[in-house]
Length: 570
Image: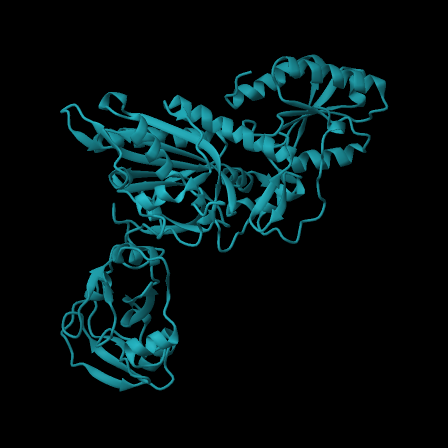
């Protein structure tokens, strides 16, 4: 392709709307343009990358014996009512009605659709296992779209659904997808880590997220410093700290005027936050949930929601609800005598002795409180893991890093097949529910994650496998007939062997060309200039600082060498 014929919309300045490197560079390189909050149009260079990532995904899925399919993005509500998700999915679901007042949604995910296909098409165990996938635009009405295409309201997703006859067979399908995902992300040039994850609204017995470490990641990921254990913060179980055992002391109510926060209490009682238990009050739909945690711990809302069976709305209680539950102002809540539908007690509280809590009386706290003697509740793990906590697998210290989720795999089991009566006839002649798995990759998010891991101050550094174009030939002067002739010859020869090649034939200064090409991120640049009189051209990798001077006749072999180094077959 000749650049003089292409739409090039590079920007020199960082757009004010952009927040992170990938968002900034996608805008500056002319790959995307915003149409509305969380909605983007893809310009020629951007859609080329999207298609390249899709091709890598297709190759990986096809190699794992999955079959491509395409479902409608417009889904009738009846399917979601059958699965039980129509009323519980929440405000992120785009809902609409047709002219006949029939309800639909724009698909944020397609479990119901694929289950419907399976129950109509799969009759016998002889048709199993089966894995169907699609690459399609999804829609979610995000409350706060941010970070460009990292969290948008319209996005492209590869979602696959496996159907098996048993849980043991599902394990094999799940592991096959696990391996396929590792291969896909490696080929995309991503350094990626699979971590244990919460299944969330998808349901099911187990799941793993494929995380890319990034300072701008929205997820916190817990890693063991010794073994291979890793988990999303939402899922990561904590090892409770065992406190020194002490004799119970007498419960004592103490006046603590204007002492509300843990910091205030530390000063007032001259102790550390580990000597306190804080009581947090939440509203889960119409229920009031109270959770007791050690003073230095942070609440894990996902663990709480899983324990109480989920909630459409889950938020901190307002002052009026706090007053109704505790008969006190905010800051003095405690577990003794609290009025709540559910009282959850973090497991660390059971191991504490003679600690301090709010007295449910404005201006007062209790000291010498002990679980089992002064109050009871539903004990469990409701806290976030802290840096330095012990790994549940090997006992070594845990560390925490931020990450971007690019893929997620789930063992759905029979959650959807039972709800929607998707069955097959087994070897014993009996009807049985299909055992399902679900496997997603965010195509746009993968694109952004690649940029986050592969960029410098000059622009993007695309891996050869997903670059919009692999090679660019740059004549220094388009007015020099000799340079143009050699550039055209190299360009034509590269096209003949299947290289995706650009010719920058624009009538611009060579410095302008280099800036644009570095910003866009073309992996290989061949510059045709005055050295042609010596039979040489410059060969430059975007990932390297230095140029190579090579003979014109060796250009094709040098390009082939780079392709071989990246395991790309011409």
